Image (tube, rainbow, N blue to C red; front, side):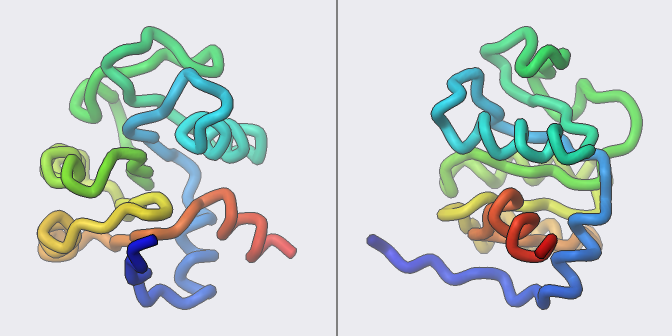
Length: 140
């Protein structure tokens, strides 16, 4: 297994991010056995306003599914990305236009170029972390 570094966020910073409510999940899956399905489902079950983004689905978890971030009306606090590291850059470029407070790259995902772009736009970046795992770890 390739070791991927993790962002240097402190527990306090992660708690602050987890206090945000509107989460757009890019790459959300219809397949309930995939992390890209059960992680956003967990977040939704725990009171987060989750918006699925997946061009191959009309709805997931009974919520309207969007083909892209740019189709979503209104504010997004966190863009949670479930895409392979080499596919993150165009997602981040699109996300920057929505001006989220945070871009969160799920466990195993890391793209320095995309992360630097987001940071230059004033957006916090979390990478190689799972929102479900962090939520459970810090909720105790």
